[in-house]
Structure formats: structure tokens, C-alpha cells
Image (cartoon, rainbow, N blue to C red):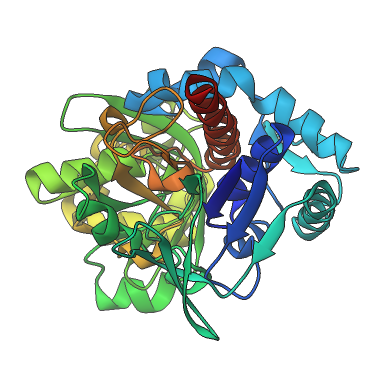
Length: 411
């Protein structure tokens, strides 16, 4: 059994591990000079491997695709992923946010240990092999430093990522190759992305780069789904980005597509109820400036005060009730998501309707897909990585099972 895997991210490497465990001969091809580049960059500030959410809550992070992803996670979920890391000699811990990290917070030691084990198990890795599709005889075609190469395999597993971070290999170049073979593909879109806001020049110059800490956000999708999250974000030159924005990005992106703009409501004082805030702001200001009054009575200062000045009318500043209401539900209008190449991850991809339970394309027997190139998305927090690992495992095991069944029928 010879299996070719194209793509050396977490999904491709996990597919290789599962296929090797099933007794297959496996070769893995990647366009870059080394594998796992996006994985390494994602772990640069601390590798968020998975999350400690209870299973049911964990599944909700996959939205409309939870039913398709549930079988992957039943076989290889967060606990199994932590156990797998431990087998590689990498201990993990649960942070205060519930996110799970390696003890040393780094991605590189885990990747090195994993690659060492995979090679010892028999994996052949060929880098600088950019897949260009198939030739007339059905062989895989690659551009390599030595020229074009054609290779045959019994089964192919594609784990080519989405369209974000193209410099690291996830450039979406596979889309036309599969579209030519009538594979249904949902358009690639940015996920876990920032958004553009029409800031005034004054606000942009003063606050770009400033973090907005501990706020509540509310976003509403075109279908009426309301998402409420708590966290932080950053003001950028063009708009907003950061953890709590990524958590509701799917809703905001879909609303912009449907209505031409998105609405994000900010609670700048999530630790205070509206009646108390009205009472506090109604206290006499005396000779104090409004900025001092806001800081003293509502703990609103710096960039939060700047956001109020940017959005709230002068008249509302004079009315404690209207000002308090604005602090608790400040309407921020988003005009566009940031470009796909800037996004952390990708929505869209190969549609699940085209795949069987083993992640094989129904119309192209022997061709499997895994990872971010499938049509699902999830927020940051370990959910993305967990599903990528799990989908790779499902595809690798599925490929071995399909080959075994085919061999049995041939006898």
C-alpha cells in the first residue's frame, strides 16, 4: 500500500502517522523547504494546542459543521491529543482561560519530536515539491528544484490548508486543480480575521496599536444567531483585530456579506450594571473635565474614552443616561473583513457533501482530503488545531481501510 500525502501541516503529518500505523508505505510532499511552518508560527507566542472545554461545549465551536466534525473528535479529541503529546515527551497544562499549552509553551520541540518518530516509523518526507495536479496518465505532478516530477500512488491524501498565510504554503492553489475535476468547493473566505472600520484620522493617529482590555462584545449573524463573548482586542490602522474579534468573526463576516456592513456592540464596562453606571455618571462633575469624570466615576479612560469620543455625539455626553447606555452598548460599524492572506485561518473549502465518512471524495475514489482545506471553521483557542489533527487521523485511517477493502475484493 503506497500512500502519498500532499501537505506537511498538522493534518498531513497526522494522516501520515495514522497511515503508517495501518501498515502503509507513506511519502509526504510539501512545497516549502521544511514542514510545519504555519504550525511553528502559530506557536510563536505560545502554542495553544487544544482547549479544556467540556465535550459538548467544545463541539459548539464548530457551528454548522459540528455534526461532521463530531466523529473525528470522538476518535481523537482534546484528551487524546494531550495524551499523544505526552507520548512525544511534551507535557501540557491548562491555562487560566481553559486553553491547553505545552509546558514550555513552544511548538518547535513538539514538532521535532514528532518528525523524529515519524521518520523512525518509516515516513519519507520530500520538501520543495509543489503539487501541480495530475498528468494524462493520472500521475501526480510536482515542480521540484530538479524540474517536473511525476509520481504514482495507490491513494492520495490532500492536506493543503486554506488560503491564509500564503508565504507559509497555504495559498489555496489547489482550488482550481480540484475544481477542474468537478469537486464542489465553497469559496475561501477569511476566518479569525480583523475588520476595517472608518476611523477618523485623529483617532487612528492616537490609538492605532492600543489594546482594548476586558470588554464584552455582541455580534448577530444574518440568520439571527447572537454571539456574546468577553475578552480583548486591538485598535489597528485600518480597524480592529484580536482574540475577542476572532471569536465572533464568522458572524460579522456573514453579516457584512448579507447587508454590506457589520455591527459590533461593545460593553466597555462589563463589570458594572447599567443602573449603577447611570447613578455614578449622574454625580456632579463640578469643575472636573469630562475625561476625569469618566475615569473617576466609570473607570473609562485611554482608548475606551477615545472610542466613546469617536462614536458618541456631544449631546449624549451631556446626558448621563444616554452616555451610560453608550458605554454598555457602543455600536461599532465594520465595513469589510481584512484580506484572506492576513487571516489566521480560512472558511470555505471542499464541501462535506462531496466526501464520504472516511473523508474520501465520492466522485474520485482514492483521493482523500483533510484539515483546513475542508469547509469548516472554528475560533482560535485550540479548536482549529484539534480538528486539523483529528481530521488528518481520520483521513489516514480511512485511506488504509479503503485500500485494505479494495485488496480484499481483488482476491
